[in-house]
Image (cartoon, rainbow over all chains, first blue to last red; front, side):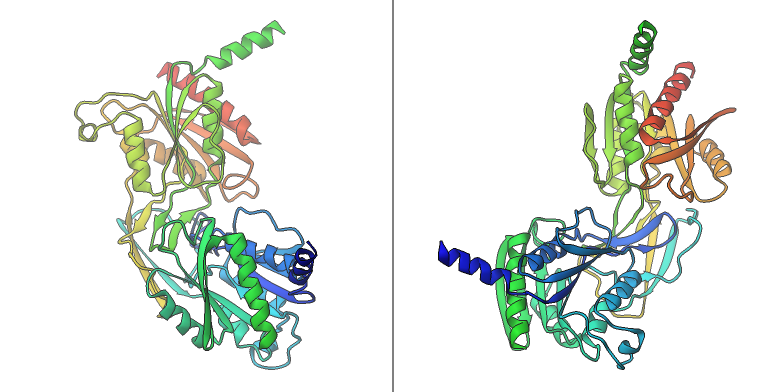
Length: 241
Length: 241
């Protein structure tokens, strides 16, 4: 019983005093006032990470795209819709000012950043103010790249410990490790969204976590259990960084 | 009190013995296993119409795109995702067989059809089996037209009393009346989704209803109240058709 209590007290202080910024959910990119492009992220994993971080003693800012989930207790929630809005909210939350992204002065305000949101890579080149009328048998839309939130955070002059997610349907390990290096991340958690019952919109997930010269398979578990395992791993890797 | 009871009993039998098929919510058109195109329909108006129809004594089949709403009591719910799936489910529910759409034999199985779903006009020309990797600074997607569920129902050899919705951001009355004639509808309910607090994703709505040589403004009200007003109007117009 005493051992349980000690273990409990140790878990509760793993991230004590840390400020963690987490993104969650999809982003929506408006095509016109009615239509948008989005993705299947439910936000469950990001919200579970926010809850787990609070349980481990951290101060948590959760920046969330449109989802149907209640705000976890003890979490500071910022709601956004588009990738550009999320980019602005993240840069503010991690304490970066305009000059930081140019590599100048920075007031770090965040110890750990976790980019769990499924941010839309592309947005419509221009949002149409009025609803596009259907007329032709074909419609062609041109999309341009959105800002890369994860990479921008990791490339700050004094970046927080930065964790990314990779949701792929093939060659998961390869893409994840490439993304880790390319974006200068400290850690990446990869899941295969093509497996039925795992990942997007489901209660369970399976994560393979990679860092420079290391990794850990967190197996299949409920997203809430996985979140505790992942945040414990993040705390350990952050401590030895 | 007796007058109330009589009014109540009259309301409850307005649509007694009628089979009403209602579509609700958005449709989602998959671009790849992760991304989709959709719209802001919450499904609230369609679900309110289903509840109102049950309250007025009808047998109700509700064919719904992905929404976050509980199935109304007493309603037969069919869940679909894409416009093509919705088209198939509607044609089955209204009792049309393949030959009907060609104008042949038909076993009508539905008295009133209400197309309240915000069906995507376009779908991606081809769904990509693997997640599209971001690479270029620009991405161009080509979309083709989806089947027109409302028009296909109204053009059946023995069509049900067919009600459409028009969600426009400009020139609402003009577009609605044009849509009424072009699609051979019996009635159309138009709302201006550009007004803050009305229409998509809100609790309130304001409807202007049109039919051949007539119309009625149902004003601003809760969607549940509007649904009762609209279904009462539908029952009246259906009775005199």
